Image 1 (cartoon, rainbow, N blue to C red):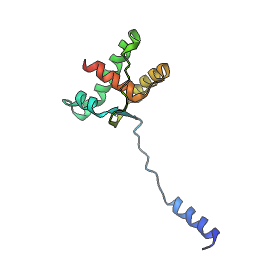
Image 2: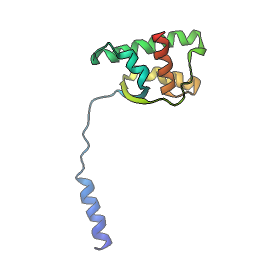
Image 3: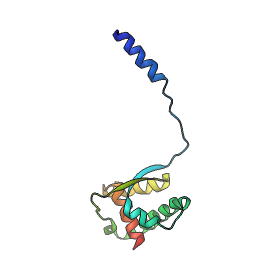
Image 4: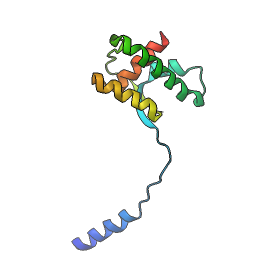
Length: 115
């Protein structure tokens, strides 16, 4: 095959790929699996998002008073979850202040909430 044909072939194959658009504007963050399962063990799927919002809000209020609430959890088995844009903004603010990972921030929030 000639180089020109290969380039045209790539162009043809590339143009056939369609990207499906979704209206889901939520963000994905990684959460320690064990802690998240402990938190959500008695909730249904629709209330998990509200529960995460409540956890982050209460943690943020307490974190402003006591910066030592943020813990380092090291390497944990994590799973991805979707959170709202507002909840993600909370995580971004704390991350900006502490330069910690989203996983450690959300794990600290959940452990604070469970205590």
